[in-house]
Image (tube, rainbow, N blue to C red):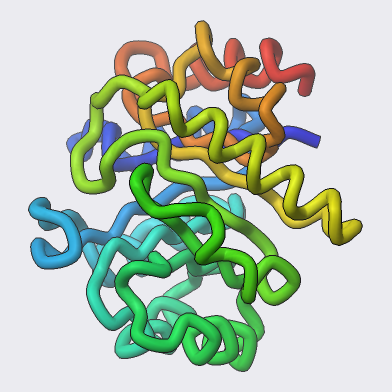
Length: 217
């Protein structure tokens, strides 16, 4: 099954609670929450207080994407405030396996992410250790970018690596996904789709419903 994970980075924070309800009612299964520290990526986004405050607004899966250096420092806190899946960047961790182990020890699902220029080979040691692999389809840190076409090949590579090992690990894509290109990334092997501007700009409920229909849900 294909999963839609609307990214609240593109939401209107004046009406965040309502927009979360809208995408929930439309049938979106996950809520993508980008956490940026201004170091691993240039931007700074929301942190723990925002996540904690919206946890009571929905029972959607909280899909938390840590774009922060040395992520193991904060894994426990993100787990405690209601994250369900915690994804960190391979490039930001000295010992990715230790981060994965920490996430699992807290009863949460672990995801590992790579940036567009990072070779998929760095994922080889972790293919059977995580529940999700995030292939960034734009450079992380800013919303509203256009999908980098070359990243679609990376999705295909990762899916091929997983299939060779009889693994059904989720592949998530994040960045520049819209209703015109979503089936291209799905066709390449992605099954968890992050969409920010394409969902939250305008009618969030209608946009999410359109995505889900295109994805066959």
